Length: 110
Image (cartoon, rainbow, N blue to C red; front, side, top):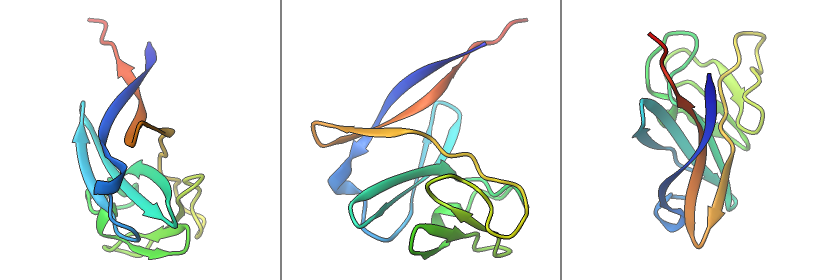
């Protein structure tokens, strides 16, 4: 079972414009981007090669290309732009100048 969990990440001003930043929080590896003031949060691990390098990807407007093999994704939806696997996106909000990301809370049943 998963429950939504709003997690404080950083100050929005600490996220550079048009460049990715990597955050590892609660077993999640995130790539965060700010483009024209809009924040995008995706899984930092490419679904193609499973390498955590999406934060180093090549930005093209509101899309990102994996720096390893070039798979492209829409940062808003996570949808692939070249008919491959989609990448996970995460909802976010800004509260008092801080970025919060909605991460599913993991509960394990043994």
